[in-house]
Length: 253
Image (cartoon, rainbow, N blue to C red; front, side, top):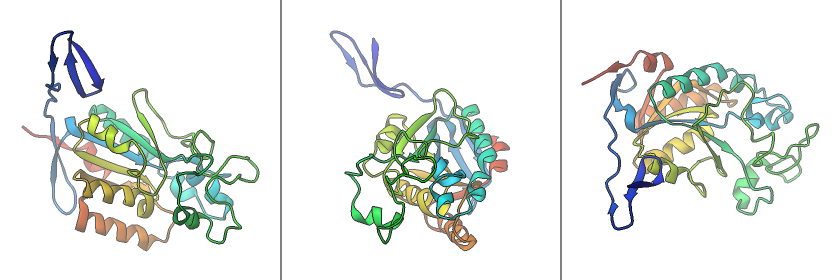
């Protein structure tokens, strides 16, 4: 029979028969220290999601830098993110890079989204041309939306464009996760109190298990914003762990 479908979510088909049986995913449990409790998860149904490690948020000459924001704090986590992605691949977990990448005509964006990034209409907002590079802010297939040079993307990694702080609205993100047959999402990236948090909360509300990897996140907001976000994740939505704890996780029967 020929397998018909994307990745793990496929049917077996032939001229006279269809098998609705999906390929079995071997359980590969791993136990990891986390807050508020130790967690055990199945590497076979887990995935790493890295949010917005792109030029507009992390590079000199990008959008945030152009409006006077210090992007050194967001760029500084690149080495940790690469290390986390390498760990995920070693666990045979999919790695998804989830970035802003809007339509150039902004036809799908309501005023409330545009207003956040250009509150008086006189500045540089989504889709506007940056001085110097000429790249358009957070626009798909532009330098602005591209991952920063330090990020190491491997063959087989998945890249998804988003159009809101949450990666779930108007995107194929949820469909991709369901085709991967994923239950548990590990989150990293920037800004932890904005796009990372919005996506994580929506994931939790959709029924995914959510785990924030603390030192693989950053924000250009004041430090209390990150502190509140990390508290809320562990208190209300899921779990917080560290890269070191993941790397020393123990296999369980």
